[in-house]
Length: 319
Length: 319
Image (tube, rainbow over all chains, first blue to last red; front, side):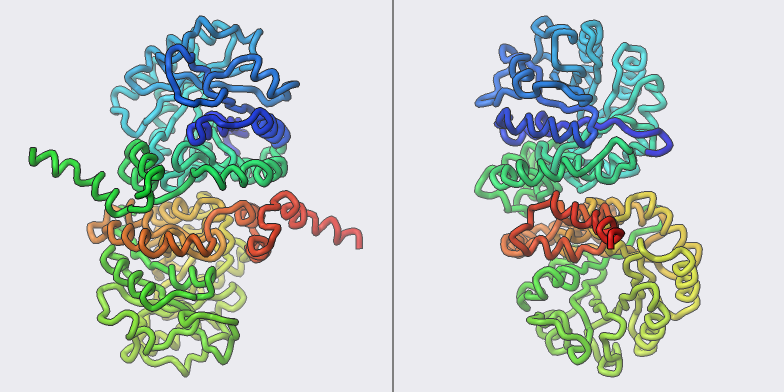
């Protein structure tokens, strides 16, 4: 981290954590998170999705799945030095319904895409750039991208107006040597872009991989409070800020919001390391089957679950 | 890991995990753990302490705090290829009360010591060597050892008959660059010894640090099932075995014992990442104050706890 200066921190608790509880956060909760992140010296707060409700149906979704400006103004009040970020998905956002940055509380729009949609992502992000936003393209499931596809995508991103390019370990399957390899590749093929990393904690590698990426040219990191995020969750904000030697950082405001808001929440909602998430991480798979298992009465039947995931090919070969 | 061949795995669930529940494991539980580790291809099981009850009083300690041969024979039955290990502490063991290895179920005796006692540890371990045991000296709290003391201790260990020398991150305060630095130092000053590592998970670095150590010359690793161990716990056995490409390793028997034995246990007993343990890790301190906090009604008063730990010096300066 030292050799690249201090990394910028983007806390995605409300956005990625919303995947766990259906974005059922009160305005009071989100306001408390914003104030705590501001006092801790966090650079960005990703406060939700900016997808269009006409283009994607999310049953019973809380308001942070479809951000609107009135909600943001009411929740945040006076903005601090902590900027706001929103995520959009390719094909799920009507960019014409989004106000220019001058009229918005949002500063950064991140476009999440799989590798095959990177041209669409660049086109969409470029529109947001022209509207005054900072932009990012987050290539999801990087562990499944084919080598040559990824190289080409990075070259095209490097030529684009996009500000940030993210390494996203969607399945939480990467360890240190993978992070070093990917950081070198991103640096080689997209040398003009600021690089970011978004990790998942299936193998308890989220903080370790984030620190390591910072030693290898990554200068933008995603974190979430208590690691709250889909399935095994993310790199804990309190660890990154607590460990950081950046004089702007202070872990104490995070401790306060942790004990007041996140401990009661964690009693009702599950995220973080469990064996099924470790299994999908080890198998380099999407956690959706593990999430389904954790919501079922069989949530701790690990051996049977592992058997199911690893014997599908054998069964298929008998067909 | 590949460049050094496959690491040997020592599971210390019963010994380090016993620090969490006062070694209150049934013989059935310990037998199930042994059979599961054997089937998973784990090389050693550390089944408890071999301290002498005359030399240390541990209130209400279960039998795994003071191993005796009858207990081991009854619990283990027929031994597999998985060897047994016991830990002893300097000054708490009467070596004359220990049978020679030929008459014992135990194969490896590990001597834990702080850096100042390393000569005592070498003397004691050498006696065990003469009795036929494999031996290890585990230098605890390596993050607090003075550089020159550590170098000299390693030189003396290198000249001794001790088989294994362990890096022990007692406070769970080390990150990747620290592990690389220490592994290089241990390799430099004790080049003739097999090197081991024992990690704690305060900063969610236990598995990451273990993998990294294996890339830097360490060939003996401590793990525990579900990370069960003092405070934030250890490197999870299921992650190390599940990730390993060693053909002897099989994660499935671990999944079985996890769901049958460890999930019910974890309902009653706490270990693993919590904010107070993260705090002592960040401050590079022994977790004892955090363990006391977690046993008190104030267990989630993080901000107040952090304030107490970090303002002691200020208060003292006013005296």
